[in-house]
Image (cartoon, rainbow, N blue to C red; front, top):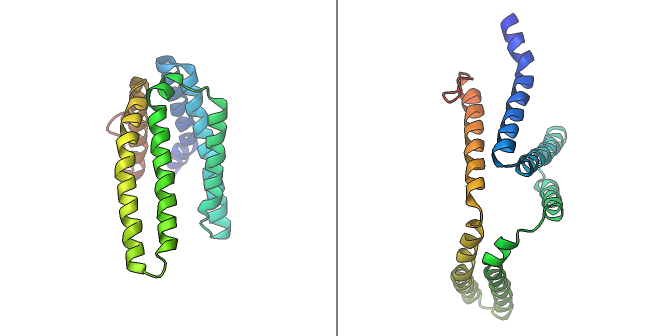
Length: 187
């Protein structure tokens, strides 16, 4: 009984220390702006998780709309507070905008065709399906190379962040799932 109490007592400080060490590792390895942006995203995610817990726990409702708008608010704060990466915009910004324009035109033509063929349901379904398929295929011609060009601007820091996140998540998941020690860090 005392041993279990001691492990539960030191569990939260140990987890916070582990997160602090990971943030310090990212700060020294990739830069403090990356480390602080990861911390910012962690805090936003924690606040959103608390919101979901309160709403789902007390009311018994699963309302995706509230958290969706909270996510849009978090995205807006990140977009406003972070400087634009001009290299990425130059590399693929026009292709992304052309892909977005093709999406808007596809939706507009599909809605217009649905309204014109309202009496012929089968023809209307086929028109919307083929219009969407053609718009999707045509949009990918511009959109996918633009996304690949944007992601090629600075891929090394992104890959290292993903591997650190994967190791930490695997450590926590193995601890939760098997109630045993992690095979990576023996924690």
